[in-house]
Each structure stands twice: as structure tokens, then as C-alpha cells.
Image 1 (cartoon, each protein chain N blue to C red):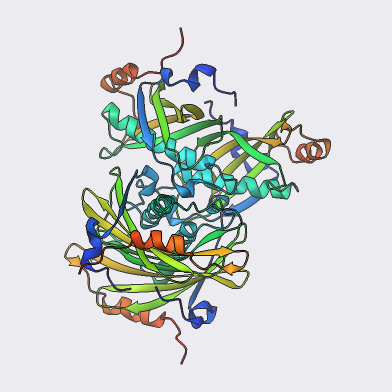
Image 2: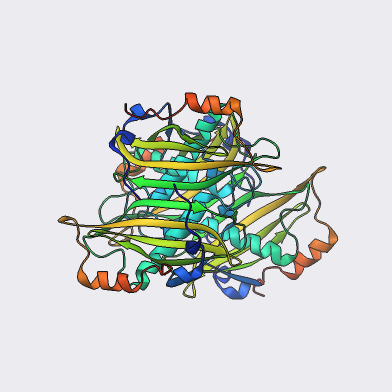
Length: 145
Length: 145
Length: 145
Length: 145
């Protein structure tokens, strides 16, 4: 598990921003926001980002499944400060794509998350169609030159 | 995010086994066990494995912090069947180590998880001492020859 | 919110027993099991009890809805000790019933929970039929004489 | 468990308002916000309300413990709409007090929650002092005349 590159810790790399409350129950016995709770916040940010892309994850007969999640914890996060989560499309394959995201508290990156999503239809894994591919390309991570 | 190698999906690769209940609340709106809930089960399995190694994560003045988590979801998991989680030490560095684990339902691997843990003491990141290193080596992943 | 009567803190009052793991994430920043996490364990125990009664909560076209939950926290609960949850039917109305339960750690009652459940069918709130009423009566709380 | 009186379902009864995000993981397999997840949102609203009262729950050597929680679920709640939670002091005793609250989505009351809190100091249950009693009285539920 390689550490994220420095540019991934900047809001400039992303195209979509959303704010999420932290909850008392997100804290664990160490008094910081638990890493699993951070994962839950990235999940909701990803749902909002997908919604922003114009494709809701609950189309009929189609299942969007999470195939992999990779998280890096950069700084300890604290309650009750909100999370600002930035998202972009990190990779587009034939039948899967990756949502790359980074969470900030008080302008400091506390964690990054890459989530690989696949779509299953009645026919099995579904090819990403041209329309959604184009939208995803317009919302790609802004990698440094 | 490369897929896990086939040998990682076998209980034979691991040295420690523990069983965990699934909860009604682990299910999401898709009717399967949510991927964040699976992450929470891996967390508890890891705590038990660390306890088995003889070092409890709540020593005075020392913080065990999760630096990275990488999850692969292999098959959909279902309530109310329990999880059997297998763990081993996947990697030992100078100041960090990785707990590698795999979760099974009804003898089918549903997910793998690799968690990188670091120890912070008053002096900053703490070197893994000889005693704990030896214990970790005795509990290493059993890689195929 | 009156305190539960003493007989409610004894396993003798109940007809069904189930064991549940506690999870690391159930702890909050006070180092004990969080009261919301205890509520989640009562929920899973209730699902198991309903299953034991022979009626699964996922019949077609029928929704079982929780109308009210009343929790009393008696003693602080701790990780990693499991919960033993005892359940019985506390009250049967025309269209709703109450599952009364108590959770124990190391034979000490840590909390009680009463959950009122209603069934909605296509016709609105559904009358409890004779068969399920009889089963519920056989699984009623054992009140002291 | 008596149903809440009608005036408890109006924002007019309360003195403090706070907004909370719902999360994808709050939904259960029925596609609505799970009742335990609603309980977690009331918990965070209560913490914010206590903070607003000027007493933070983490003073040294003092534990604020939840003694009882009573929830009524009025309407099904849905993701991704936020919760607006209204709070007030419902009852002040010698050593305990009740936070009474109601949660709204789109101006409809979806649930009410009454939480009884006690303070433990080194001496055992602590008397509510005059200063905090006065603040609580100023933030009492507005009961209809």
C-alpha cells in the first residue's frame, strides 16, 4: 500500500466538493474519528458525486457494486468539525471505474479514498456506455502536468 | 488496486481465525452486507488478532494508529450468517506492520483486507522491538512456495 | 421514563436467549459501549427472536415497522465481552406488539429495551392474526405472580 | 409506551435547532432510514445542544451518562434528505435531566426522542448546580398553555 502522492492531498486535484457532518458516534475510544467512520463518510460523498454525474445508483435491474476500497489516513480527524470531501473520477476501465477522493478538516487533508465500482446488469458485468464515459472523462482527476 | 492473488482467498494462508456476528444494521438498501460494515468487522477481527499476539492496543502513552486500509470485495455477503475472519501478519517494516485478513461466509471468501498499523510513542513513530517482531514473524502470512 | 422493575433485570422473565459479539466500533470516546450501539444489538436480537417465532420480517408486500423504542441503561457495558440478550413478547395489541428484552454482560443486566412493532400490509395497519397471536402468547414475558 | 402528544411534533415546542446530514449507510434493507441510525442522529443533536448550553460533556473527572432513551417513530425517513432536529430540556430532576427532541425531514416530524442524562462525579451521582439549572430552565420545552 503505497502512500498517496502529494498532489492527491490538494483540493485542486478534484472536481466536486461536498460537506458532511461528523457524528458523536464516529469517535472511537481513542477520542478521534474512527477510520471505519471515515470510510462511511467517503461512501456518502461518493453517492453524492455519482448523483452529480447524473446516474443514480438505484436504476431498475442494475446493481452498482463496490469491488475495492483503498484508504490512506493522513492526519487524525476530530469531532465535531465537519468533513469537506473532494471527488473525481480516477480511472475508467471497460466495466469499472474508480472514484478518487480526499477528505479535509479545517483545510487539512485527513484521508484519501479510492473506490472501484462495477455495474452489473442482467447480462453480468456491464460495459460503460459512451454517454457515461464522456461524463466521467469530464470529471476526471486533475493530475499534475 | 490490483485484485488479491488466489492464495489470499484460502484459509490456509492465515494463522488466526475468529468468528463475528453479522447485524441487521450491517445490511444496506441493496439487501446485502454493506462494504463499510464489512470493514468494521475486519477492524474487530484485527483487534482480536492483536490481542492474540499479546500486545493490547491500549498501553499507556502509546497510540496504535491505522495508516492505511485496502479492501477487496469478492462476493456479496449476507445477513444473518456469521463471518469467519482469518488473519496473519502480511508485512513487517521498521515502524509499521500490515495485518492481512480474509472474511468467509459459508466457506466462501467474501472479502480481503490489509491494514497498515503504526505505533506512536512520546518519541514519535516507534521502532518495532525485537520481541514483538519475533512474535509477528511467527504469525506471518503463509505464502505459497 | 420510569425505571424498569427489578424482575425485568432477571433472565427468568424471558423465553428466548441469543448471544451477540461486541465490536471495537461500539465503543465511544468514554471507553464504554455506546448506548446507540447497544440499541443496534437489541435490534439484531429482536430480528432473531422474530425469526424464532416463525415469521420472517421480509414477507412480500408486508412491512414490519418499528413504532417506538424505549431503552434503559442499567450498567456500563464493555468491549470485548459479548452480549447475551433475552427476549419475550411484552404486550400484544390489535395491530402492534412489543418485544421486551434485556442485555447481559457477565451475568449482569446492562440494559433493557422495549420495541413496539406494527405490521403494514396493502390495506394499511394489519390485524395480528390468530396463529401469530397464539405463538406470541406462548412467548410472553414471565411476569412475577 | 404512550404516543407523543401532538404539540411535541411541532418545532414551536423547542428552543434549539440543528441540521444533520443523513448517510447512505443510515438506510437499511427496507430502503428507509433505519431507526437505530435515527437514534444516532438524535445523539449528535443532543451533544450539540449540550454544547450550546455551555457545558461540554468531557469535563475532567466527570462522566455524563445516558440513563434512558425513549424514541417514537412517526413517519418513515429517507436518504439523502437532511434532518432538522429541535431540542429543549424536557425535565430537570435533582441529579438528572431529560433532553426532549424531535426530528424533521422536509418540515414533517419523523421521530421524537427523550434522553435522560445523569452526571457522575467522584462522589457518585452529582446534584445539578444552580447555574446549570438556571440555564436549563431557560431552555425548557415550551408546553402548550
